[in-house]
Image (cartoon, rainbow, N blue to C red):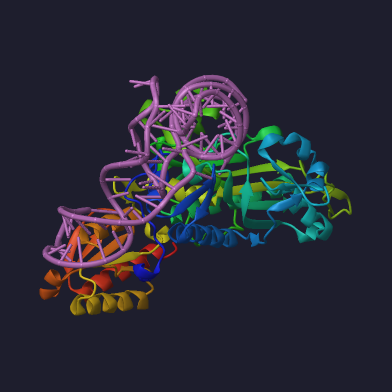
Length: 447
RNA sequence: CGGGGCGUAGCGCAGCCUGGUAGCGCAUCUGCUUUGGGAGCAGAGGGUCGCAGGUUCGAAUCCUGCCGCCCCGACCA
């Protein structure tokens, strides 16, 4: 992609209402534009990151056996009246009236709708287990939206719903999602730690938040440091195998956010292993049994021919929130430092003298070589000044930037800058292309 | 929802207290000079001063109401 044909409205100065790093950079790098409090338009650069995150989430959901569908953003109130939540939800739910005076709402979540969808078609235990997910925009009329896309009112979310015959089977579904989540975040270049969350009215141990550990997250996290060092389960993990040992391993050590923090249990953690830091919740999974299937009459017949309400769980990932959260986890004073799997482009090319026959030719050859090897390139072919181009590259945070100028070309060299380390190296264009292509290939390999 | 603050050019801000021709920096456009980390000089364009009332000869400025946005707290994916 040529920058001259792309739409990248960057800002030199920070808009006044952006406080935290991710929000500032997203505005300055031309990723988003605010349209109202907590409501953002996604500009091309931001959208590319959003799509990358979505794709990883989708792949790992499929791997775990979930099947994608798509439910609407607008829902009829009648569904929510069945579950009793239309009255219970409060002002966070955006209520709408259509032209016929019917009560509608912009969905803050989809439990009711998915239950309605499943109850008419799923009549037998033989159709279970079932996991359905979708990635859709949601709206919660937060009293106080803040931190850009991290706490917006409109947000993109992946939510999965599991349906099983028994609590034991539902636990298996829960564990599948648990493993899928560990893998999902790891693939984005971050480690999200599962922490014990409020299980709600059902009780038990089946509710976890996945928290991305950052400098200045929204909540305080207390954990046994051994937990942060555990790598994600590998790609060849068999989701139909017994996942209990894996689950035990990941939940044995203490991990709580401030709201669930238990001083007595915390005291049992060896002092040298206690770590307290901040975190951003990027995923939440929980088992809620028959909370919706009961009132909404979603039942199947079991092997004995007995009508049984479905055992359900739901599993969310804040897709749009992750864009901001990933920046919080990976950035420096100049801008984000995108991990390769979620970077809007893998590599930038800076033509220091656009219009010059040699540099133009070298840049175009480099572009072609990289793109032929599957590297996504943003080629800065503009006539802007060098300093401006460098600053812009840093601001948009592409993992690699290749600088091509007449001076270097005389020596047959270009400069490759690795954004994550700040390291710069001079090499021949061919070598640069090979080096970057290899790094990208390695980073995108799913393990 | 409690407390605080802000709305003036695309962005960042000054002007308001003490009413009198709407300003600065960045960005944009033109020309010249520059060109390896957000250039220099000269010139130009761009504004319902959030909206509506009121006071006044005269309102960005004073008064009232409304709207929007931000920050702290409570709440939340």
